[in-house]
Image (cartoon, rainbow, N blue to C red):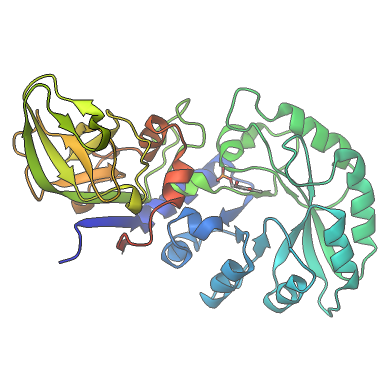
Length: 372
Ligand SMILES: Cc1ncc(COP(=O)(O)O)c(C=O)c1O
């Protein structure tokens, strides 16, 4: 018998989330962002749920090849563009659109031999200081690209540093507008946070939005807003069973380092999930979990293959009980109301991180079931 742990990917939830995002930016075309193997969900697994997207955005050429192999004939965008000149050959062969964020990428295009001019997304650095041309250098880059026979349409793009926070997008938006207002081309501006929070009041029309995290059902601005606030449903659920029960007395400790010590009689369950499955080791005592649909908490340190939960107030829970680490209980995924599970953002928050990191870290050894 395999270890009793399983991740579930709910394709209906993904479709639902995509439609919620579309409703927030009704005039925009949507790039479904599937970088990092669809945020840990698996590109092949989520593909059917993204059929209603207008394009697929990702980073790796190998991921782009996988998307084409799945039969996707629509636009595919390389969010960081190419890394070396020969990558452009694959772009030509697979008809990939690509970001151009630096002079070196224009140099590569200038020497690329192709009969098929490329659609490119010219990226401005509007304050994030990661990728993109400085606002003052943007027009020169556009002019250079525009003169190349290798280049077809040029779209304009930026990525907001603070769409999820208090600072917001106003300053970045105003820089972008100032330096692009008289340039032709479609615009792509918004990630999930900007799509949900700002798409309806943008100073510039957003022809293409680029949601990632919201597609997968995690709130881009938790704890300010929960997934429920945004009407998002969890796509990934992680469930495991209790494999042992222990009874503690006052003074008894739990796990490595005796990090939790009971102050009275307790019943605890040992769960077949640890950090080697992708559960964050740093999650402290008190991180929420659900046992047979009832909320309780983790106790002590997470170990490689196991973690421990408090069953003191759950007398019916026993070996074989289902523990939801995040998402919805497996038995009822997709029918259950979102309150019967554990929101991934709560677990991430308790561990001092974000839902993105937990999804991406789901370990390869965890069996995955796709529900549609
Ligand atoms: C350029 C770009 N666009 C869109 C996204 C999607 O962002 P999110 O998952 O926050 O929606 C990312 C992710 O980091 C990105 O780097």
